[in-house]
Each structure stands twice: as structure tokens, then as C-alpha cells.
Image (cartoon, rainbow, N blue to C red; front, side, top):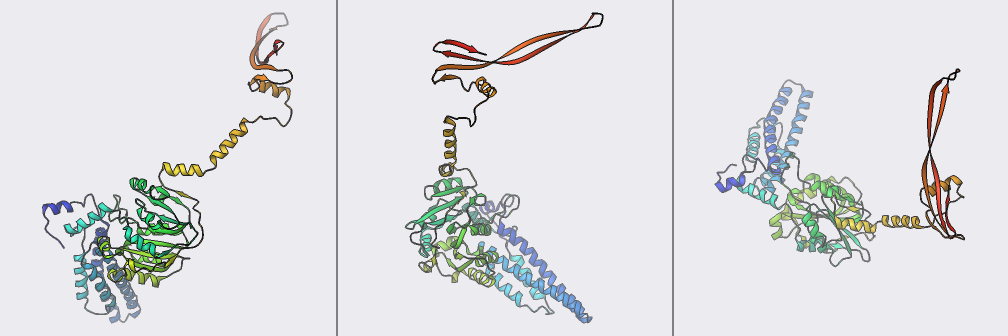
Length: 478
């Protein structure tokens, strides 16, 4: 699908050298692979027929199994194009679903593959790619990149909160791994007995969040140190990035946020997961349904849904089990958002939080934060231990055994006993050490008395002197 562009449009599309979009990159690869499948399927069918004609049934069956595997992989691939087409608001999203169903039902032993091949080639050729995308699609993607940060609408947070039953007499711990300015989590906590924790990558927003939340970790959530199983609710609205990094890495982190937030929840704790409906891929649905029970999905109200296509998936954490059937059901429901109930249909108090107090032992962001450091130092016992040692140092110390003469000399020479000695005979003492040098010589003569050599020997020794000032006068002890 190509289009002639005005100069203004061309400026919008002038991005391929500096900006590569994840959805377009994926669709480009998928279009090429679908074309390869379209060429390969008739070849496998022909080889199967040749083996059957030669009555080599075993070999024909092996080739047929490969043909069947290729068809199944093609169906999966066509399904995989749909989320990216939905993100681009492309009309082929509906075609992808129907085409996948037709390919799945196709009789593989049909002799004529021409119609199937033509349909697949036509679909692959119509997919938007880096080379065939018009300015309106690029404009939408650029808008997504510029926004990046999608704060949850406060009214929708209220609707979600209405569906939560907070335990009485228990302070519940709330965590937002992408808290932004903290407004959403503060709205959830208002009127409830909650302690709010948030992590925010953007320093400016994190500083604003400090006025809303009790604890804020600065920097990437993936570098934070947070206690496992310490939270009653995780409110997760991850960033929706649509670009590839400069080194080609994937910037989409919805699944990683979900996986790394999961162990922070206590058993029975509530996960609130907010993403565009087209980002609820099969693998994410599988993670959710394997680890949560009483899973529900609601779309945002019409006005807000039209802007960001968001849905809220909620569930209570449980021990992990394989739940492929529920995952397929959730994925299918997400693919038809027009049939999903809106958030105002969420039953009041549907999700009861665990009535147990939880302690957050560790909560530290990936980046230095003065307020968080001050809080940690205040809670630390390090200063008490330092002060306790200082107090011990200031006390009078007595040796466990009487000192020997040599030990007294060492202490006196080092100056540790200088000063006024208050006793029955008060005096002032000052010890010092002086070096003394003693020279000796020895002559060596022959038997005839002739001087052969003279040996000189210098001996340097330390001499300790105590100077005493007493009421009776000055004395020096050596």
C-alpha cells in the first residue's frame, strides 16, 4: 500500500534512518515469511503426491507431516500479524483473523494450491512495512513514541478501586512499578488504610511522586531492590514503547514488567495490569492465567478507550499451574474489545485482599535518591552502634592484670600517662624517650705489636626519662 506524499507528509515519514518502529519491523519480517510459506506449501504437496504415485507411502506420510507442520506454523504467523495491525489501526486486522481460519481449514491434499497461494501473496503484499507505509500510519506511531507515558485516568482508577475489598484494621501495601507522578496510586489509596510504594524511571516525575506516595524508588524498576511477597496490590501500567533501540533491541517491556512484578505480590494479592488490548498476546495471557485466579478483563470507558485502546486485566495471585484453556479464552476475548464489558461493570468488592499485615524489608531504587537515603539512615542502627563505641572509648579503662615495668615504660614513653595524677601524692608527669649513642673502638694488632686494624662500633639505645613536678619540687627519673 503506497501513497504519494506531500512535502509535509514526507517530513513526517523521513524517519527510517533514525527511528525504526517495532510493529513495522515485525510486519516486514512476517510479510517475507508468509510469502516463503506460500511458495513452499505447493512444493511439499507435489512431493507428497509423487511419493504416493510411486507407492512409497511411508515417505509420503513423512512429507505430509512436514506439510502439516508448515501449515500450522503459517496459521500461527498470520495470527501474529493481527496485534501489530491493530496497533496501526489497519483494516487488514480483520482480514488476518479470517485468513488464518481459512488456512487452518484448508484441505492439504487439494491438488490446486493456486487460490491459496494467491491469497497469501496478496495478504503479504498488503501488509504495511517500512517501505510501504503511508504518512498517517507513521504519524500515529510517532505520536505514540512522543507520548510514551500514558498516565491512568483517575476516574478509571476509581472504578478499579471500587472492585477491591480492602481488609479492615490492616495496612495494605500498594506498589506501582511505573508510578509516574504517583497520582493513580494515591487515588487508589485515598479513603483506604494503605502504604504506597512507587518506582519511576523519569527523575522529574519521580520527584513529583514523592509528594503523593510514601516511598519512591528512582530509576529503572528492573534495577530496584524490593522485597518479594510483600505487597497486597501491584498496580501495573507499563510504558507502551513502539520503537527499536539503536542496537536493534526490543523496547517492549510489558511481559518483562509482568514477570518481574509477579513475585512481589503476596499469595492472594491482586494484580491490576493495564495495557492496550492488542498487547495482550498469547504469551502474556498464558503468564497471567497460569499465575492468577478469578481473572477478569474490562475495557476502559468509550472516550478513554478510543484514545489509548486500554483494558484492565485483574486477578488474584495463586500457586502456578498450567492453564492453557483459560489463556486461550483470555486471548480470544482481548482480540474482540468491542465485546468486553466496560470498567463500570466491575462488581463492587469483587477482589478481597489478604487480611494479613506484610512488612517491606527492602525497598531501594536503582538510582541515588537523597530522601530515600535519609529514610534508610534514620531506620538504620549503624549510628547507635557508632555512638555506643564512642561512649566506650571515653570511659576509664583498667587493665585486667597489673602492668609490668616494661609495659609501664612503653605507656609512659608514648605519652598516654602524661598529665596530672590525682592521688595521695599529686604530681604532674611527662614521659619522653631520648636516643643515646655510645661509641667503642677496638684495635687489632699482630703478634709483634704492629697495628693491623681498628674496629669502631656505635650503639644507639633508647633511654626513657620521666619528669615529675611535685609539691616538693622537680625531679627527673631515668
